[in-house]
Length: 293
Image 1 (cartoon, rainbow, N blue to C red):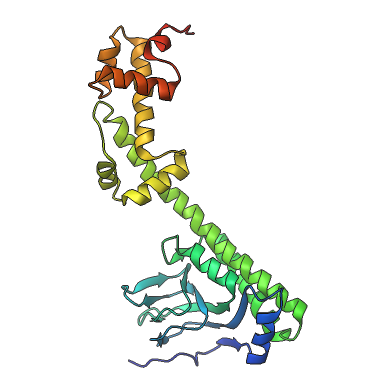
Image 2 (cartoon, helix red, strand yellow; image 1 turned 135 degrees about the horizontal axis):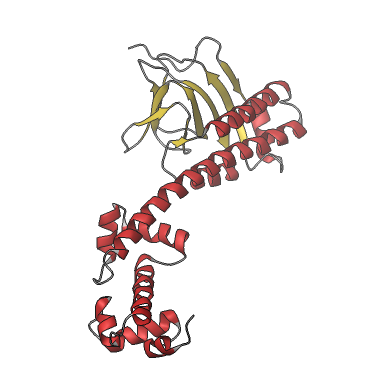
């Protein structure tokens, strides 16, 4: 199969000259994040790029149509579909290319600077590649074209290059925001499933291992999203559900405190009473005798 890195019909390509790169690197308004290479490849059939030693800049690729793939060292190739944004950290051995049957149209740029590194670290916390909703896709392309045109037509203007630096930051913030919104929806689904599982088993004693298996997440990931969504760890939340159910039993039944504790999984009534007071703020007997209604 033919392979090529550039040379596509209607492609756009700009590489920052080395002496201008030195200026960007030293200027306080651009040193944190500056584009060294930028371009677009429409319907890039046979596109292929391989860098066994990695690249000296961070690479960002937005696929506007068609599809392709990205593979980094030690990982399986990831499909990059239309509307997806992929990135490759500086120094990471990699290869990427267009799908043979449905070659991608991509908008890409290389970025250097400490700010670029921080954006890569931020984006690493989300599943890759990152899918963008249509409004964000349109805004991303607007920002990309603004960066490209300023680099091509105003490369010697420090003010305009500072604008490019801020523009590319805005673009990456847009991508991170889209990833965060999507992850919030996904995380909420995991948390909801875990809470339903807890509510169905308040008379038992679940472990973190059991919960993580049920929602198919690692324990660390489950703890992280639970704290983000509810403010507490999964088992702490489970104990609160138990105390909430115990309060209902105390309100609505004449069961003894020992029987109420047993109904929510506690064999030791003294331990149940201490935990109830710690979470609810009153001992079970005080809670039952308080004025209601």
